[in-house]
Length: 464
Image (cartoon, rainbow, N blue to C red; front, side, top):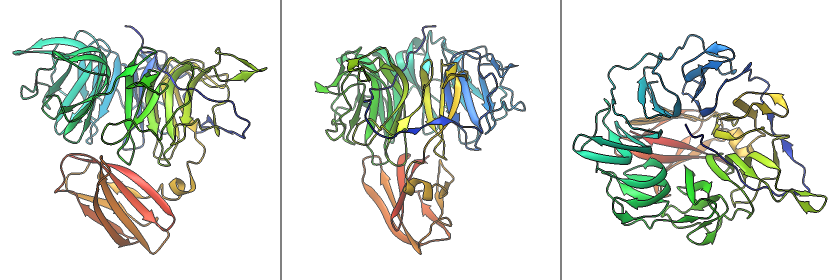
């Protein structure tokens, strides 16, 4: 299995006072994971799912996937079925079921208790990575690096499965010619990133859109990443509907963008986001904070570190944070950093940063492949309103918003779609629960904004 190399981006050494981002003292991993890690996610119950090539965690046997308690210790009551695979991606269902994409082509679904879900069967020989899984209604979009003849179709790097794992023949038989395909479901569209040259026989660029049925969305102008391999490896969506992308590229559509760029909601390049130029390898994991700052995990060489007035491109950084305008956040300092790539970053509800990868050290201490960092306060606004909760999420009908933590007498509630269009605005009395009727909205991603005097917070809402 060829390792997936990740990256982060260029940082200026500026004369400012930095806030060192330290290891979370409440996170005890023991000896950690014994093999490379690709997945780390906070689950709805606060516990943490990890997955990768590991066969042990803190000296105890596991089967490529494990659940951790909130303090980082292994949840020994949860034992995953041995599906005979190693995993590159995971999708956590609202009911606690877990869909796992195998590094060698398998696709597995576990029940919430870790047992094999016998109601799901995808007995296809994908041949290589099923490296990304998205949910579209009650169906799965799987993407990665694979070729498969199934039924009467030929599928290359993307296909859609029914809930039981069977092939959804209503989805176009699509061949994406290229590599690193990732499909993100955004409402009734599918956002594709990677290093893709053709959609079937149609020449295409690295970033483009499909319609819900897999046909090419010709209303979206594809974007071409170039230089340094020219691959878009990951995407994250901001609360305002803009897209942040990262990967191995130096330009987007001919405009300088070093390994990270931001697109407007209509897919055009955002000229208000300009990262610094420089040398690097690649960035493949993004987490966006509520205050708009952007965390990128991976692997890059920092040729901007000025040592004795000379550039030194031997300095390696594995996690970095950017301001909303693309400049490096110089208040974010991970000390002596990780000693190897960070393959995934994930922001917990409390602002702490989860990380998984190939690293075996953090800040010169043995910390093997799983980490949680005690992030500096995100901002006064984010901290004050971090206890405002919404549920259920994903939601079908009514979304409950708990306004008890709000400090002022009233709060303004606003709902936006992924394009930034305002769909709902109303003022409510604070210190009570309110319900928002979502039944009339289409399935997809929405953003809820709660304004309380001078404080604002946003929550991503998934409508099923």
